[in-house]
Image 1: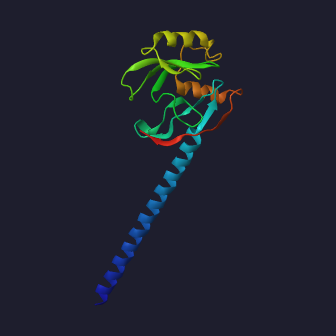
Image 2 (image 1 turned 30 degrees about the vertical axis):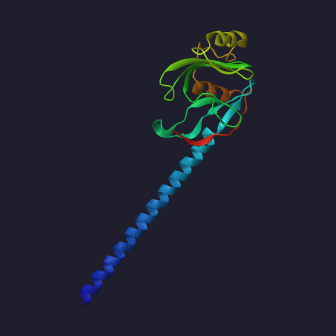
Image 3 (image 1 turned 180 degrees about the horizontal axis):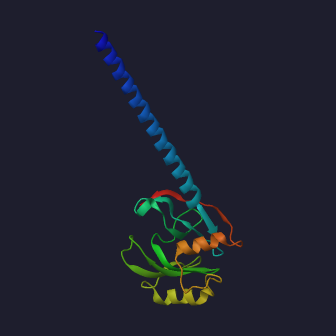
Length: 177
């Protein structure tokens, strides 16, 4: 009887240790998720204000459709709505206009676009004359960056480092897919 009682105590002790180990693992996972959320939130809610009235920033904090949940950089309105939800492989920004080339999962095809506040978004294939007019009237693009074209992510990183562009928190969705 004494052996049975001792065996029951050992079983209770082992069960208690398992519960404590599970609780410690859960706590560690929660701390890790909290840290990741805080780090992503701080990095991907930043943007820069452009002279033409748009912001250049990330579409969301987490993009569930992309590897590592890393979001794409997009020009967006003050309320956080992206101008275009597709990746922009060439972006040109002037004091009045944003134009370039986009390709992404929402369109399944590439297209040239131009945006100006008084006209709105125009795609070259929809109105080639208006597109060409917007681009020709826009002036010199992308300040003094010495590349023929640049993607939005690279341009955003470049602008974060420039003293004449201040980064700030802007409206950004938490999750997109």
